[in-house]
Image: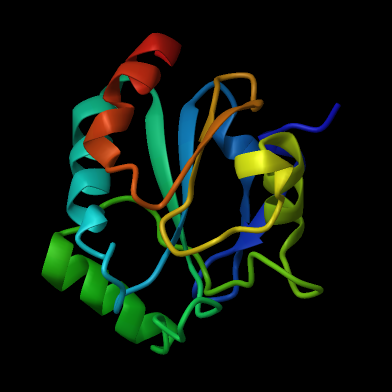
Length: 159
């Protein structure tokens, strides 16, 4: 059975981030965008990061431009926006595709482990979230409209 530790992803500078480095942590994986109605969720995601990081929790953001072209910026522009607008301290990875033939392997796995409504696998919009336990298994998928603060009890239960 696959786990989060089986995947590597790219940082904005092109270096590889081995997700095995997160073994033993509770992780929230989110596809993000800077020009979306849900963009203010960055604030709530950062609150979760700050509240639970010391206990072994990590948010990882994956900017994606597949939904309404709402993440058009370069890696530098995205990083600057996240830092200056929301004081984001969690890792923001290289911009990726989460659907279609260009979907990164991590997202293909996430969608298979936790399908959406009525068994759909596709990511429907920005700020879809996946909660992963300390063993690297997907526990739950959350819709874009699920605000980060509503995930606290689920995170707390895994910590």
